[in-house]
Image: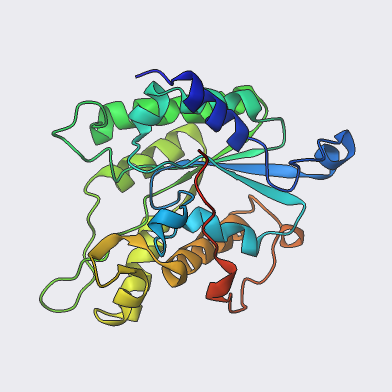
Length: 264
C-alpha cells in the first residue's frame, strides 16, 4: 500500500523532532542527535481520543537529556512488513542523519497469520524486512538498534507470566547476532517485570478501564515502566552514555504524560 499525499505530509512532519520545530537552526542540529522509533501501537504516540492508552515511546524522552531527541514514527497496527509497504520506513530514512539512531520494535502485528498485508514468518520474511531497517540506517551513517517486542499481560493458572510472541523474539536475536546489531531484549525483560509485579498488580500497568480490559496496550504507569527498561538497556548496551541519560532511578509522575489532539 502506498501513502496518500496527506499521509506523506503528516509522516514528514513527524520527522521534525519537537525540540527543533520552529527553530530549524543549524546550531541546534549540531548539538543534538535523534533517536527514531519504528514500531507498532505499543510504542506509538497516542492522542486525546485514545487516552489513557499510552505508548512507551511517549515516555522515553523523560529518561533522555535534551541533547538526545526522540522522533517517534511507531504507528498502531503496523508490522515490519506494512510499515515498509506503506512507505513509512522511506520517510524515516529520508530524515535520518549520520550519528542518529533507529530503534526497531515489531512482532505484535507480524504474528497475524490471517492478514497478508501484515503477516511475516519469523525465520524468513520477518528477518528479511528487519534487514531493510538495519541496512537502511547503516547506509546513512546511523546506528540501528533492534528491540524484541514488549510482552503482553498473560498469566497461566499458576500465576506465571507467559510469553506470547512465539519465535519472533528468537528470530530477532538471531538476526542481531548475524548482522552484529545491538539488541535490547525488551521481551525477556518485560516478561520478568510482569512476573515480579504479579497477576493483579499488572492490571494497573495496562489499559484496563471501565470500557475494556486490554492486556496489550499500556496506560501511563505501564508506558513509563517499559520506557525505563528501554532507557536502561540503551545505557547497558552502550548505545547511549551516562551523559545522555537522566531520571533512571527516579519516579516519573503520571501527570507528565499528555495526549495532544490529533492533526486534522
